[in-house]
Amino acid sequence: MKTIINEIKKELNSLITIPEDKRSRFFKSGKGDYSEHDIFIGVKVPDLRRLAKKYSALDLSDSEKLIQSPINEERQLALYILTNQFKKGDTKIQEKIYEFYLKNLKFINNWNLVDVSAHLILGAYLLNRDKSTLFDLANSENLWKRRISIVATWYFIRNQELDTTIEIAKILLNDNHDLIHKAVGWMLREMGKKDEDKLVIFLEKYAEIMPRTMLRYSIEKFSGETRKKWLLK
Image (cartoon, rainbow, N blue to C red; front, side):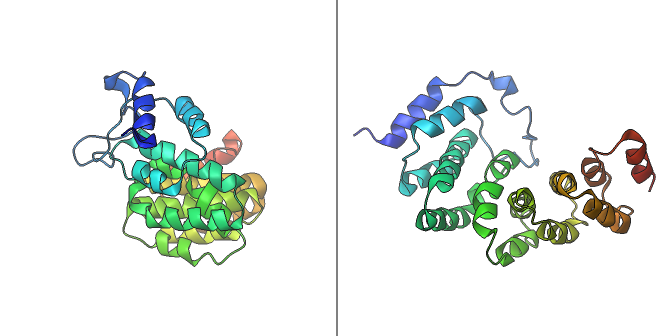
């Protein structure tokens, strides 16, 4: 019997356009690398977004089949569908999607998956709620949970709530993974767009101990001379 998941998988296969040797060029997928576990079939992001609109009414049980797939694009498609549903849903639907997201965190296990969803689901849901979940994630031994914790705060930044970003950035200051350095620096940079003084205060206190990549990302919007000053620290 034909199922909607089979239909989606068939459509995904018809949209494969990226050559095999270029499918994982933005990810470290060698043995021992962070993307070693992942399978990329070669579907472009715009095609995934279009497909997400087509299947915008997909129920959570079918989304779960996609998000638990070993194929990166299938998991990413599920997340595009979920973020669209969350944005348009009422409080009850949003709560269900939030709980679904937390239940399936172990499958949100690459930076592209985290970065298209953490702020639009966890961040959006927790904006005016208790944020202890994010602090638990920030203290996790799991790389992707830590990245989720800081990227989720992007939604807060967009809504002028900057303190959570600062507190989670402090927790992750001594993280040993480059993907966390980049994510924290990115969120600090976004925070600086809203309140440059807060970013400067943070840098005055922590620039000397920040990983170089984190610092570079956080000061990208400063003038050339100002960037040099901070890098010299």
